[in-house]
Length: 98
Image (cartoon, rainbow, N blue to C red; front, side, top):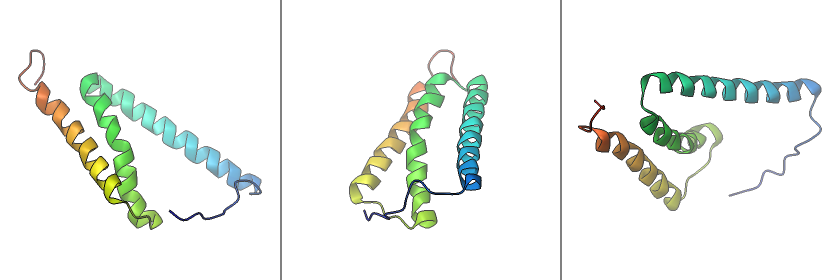
């Protein structure tokens, strides 16, 4: 993975405000979406699904940031998605679940 050698400081005040707003908005939206989902789904389904977030980010990093994934990253992502899929499948038919 190449390094960009971009500075972390020296940006304008407006840029720092944008960084702050992006962080606060995305975290707030994620928190609210998670709590909304917990009102309709079992926590045992929502929690494993959260593991898919880094996989989706890695997939989006390809076209958006021109990043490539290694074979191990792809295999790891597939393993995580298989686990996320397996959780609700394993709960079908158990008492109190659809």
